[in-house]
Image 1 (cartoon, rainbow, N blue to C red):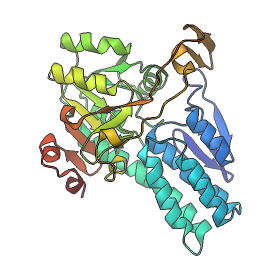
Image 2: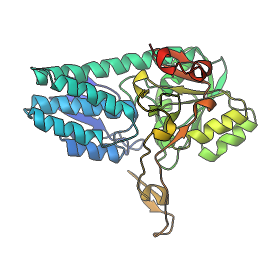
Image 3: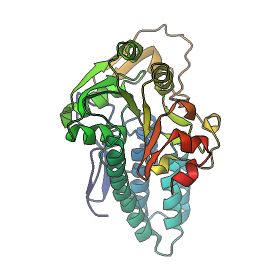
Length: 342
């Protein structure tokens, strides 16, 4: 396959390399990924994360494995294993469906390579269109709040919600970005703060529990987040803590926007209650670990509840900013979410 270079994925010398997002921001470390088991471990440990990037990494690895001579039956098994690695993020399922269609072609190895690269280019273009649509919603001098990480680390392009922030910053509209630390894995503190610094966007990092007081003080003009899955009725699954922000924004009458590619919409999922929510390890809550070492602060036998995502009801969302345009609450209330995607 031809060489490829994104913020978090590289193809060189017919090998897939991933940027270890658990090592950031202290270290920029690239890891080779040569097998399905390796990629599944990278996904589950969040070395690879972000709904679009997970899907792209799986597609690229499958294409490489096809070029290396794996049989169709072996590739089909690899598809099924990857599909189970992250149940909430629908982009992974969509990408694997397209790779499965390529696998059904007579020249399946060539078809899979072409399809994987096409998915990367499509994602880049989707990000640009999301940024353009979203920036139109940002007012000059805005102080915006974001949660988790939605930039180039999570996509092949400039990102979804962070892509909107970048485009608005380029247009001179951003006064300040408030970055939620995003417990329990600190993707905001580790990744979004790093990305915004690299992009030159002014930001301040806050604890998740500070958002309410900032809103009450009139310091937040809008909230921008991404999505791992959008149900048919407009309900959104995203990183745990997103729902809390939506409730706070609704109470304080602050716009709450979701930025995502149309591929994140799942027309087969009727509502948020039907979205599978991944439960993660207790150790992510009882302490912290990273390139800096590890620390345990809770009792060793503490019982832990650790869902990776929560669901924000459509009624709390001011707009779904997709590559195909902005879907309004009025359109969702009329039951035309799917039609609006066309």
